[in-house]
Each structure stands twice: as C-alpha cells, then as structure tokens.
Length: 149
Image (cartoon, rainbow, N blue to C red):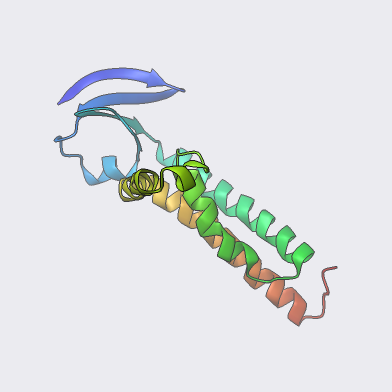
C-alpha cells in the first residue's frame, strides 16, 4: 500500500511500509534510500537510466584503471583497489569514525551492503568490470610490444 508520493531530484518517490512486497521488476528498477522507523523511500529508476549508469561506471573505471596501470606499471592495481572504492561509495560514515567508533560504523556498513538494491549492485559490478577490462587491455598491449611509459 503506497502511503505517500513525492518527487526527489526528478525521480518519482514512494514512501512505503517496509512490510510491503515488491514485484521483481520493481526490485530490479529501484534504488533504496535509507529511511527512519517503519517507512523507507523507494526511488524508482528507469531501465534506460540504469543502463546509462552501468555504462558510465564501466567507462569511468576503465579510464581510471587504464591511467593508473600506465603510470604505476601495475597491471591489476585498479581491480584490487576497486572494492575499497565501492565500499566508500556505499558508505555514509566518515572515514575517521572507523577508528573512533569501530563497531557501530562497521555494522552500519554491513547493513548498507546487505540492503543494496539490485540496480546498485549492477552499477557497482559494471565499475569493477571496467577496472578488470582495463587490466586485460594493458596486459594485451604490453604483450604486443607497447611499453606504456
């Protein structure tokens, strides 16, 4: 049962009860926003926006990985660093709080990772795919004789 409808950054949002069941398409095309209490705001994402976001993350992290591989001459550096970057993308806790309030900040991070929507997971996976493709590309270019700095 939809409780309220509002607009947030151009997306249509619904404030729903957490016990409401969503269809598979709604789960695939939604981004969860953390709410307080029993209600959570669900931002519905268009499939076109999802595909463009996936492509942007793939190209973005391919480019960053390619440049890091050329400058540092370490083929898989971005593929190793990317999971840490993804944790910082998901996280909303300040970095210093991991040292001052370790247990609450790590439990909050674990909760956020478990509550990621499928759209978020797909976008983050495409970013990691871009980092891996950058590593394979650099490896293939070096094998063919290009020194890359």
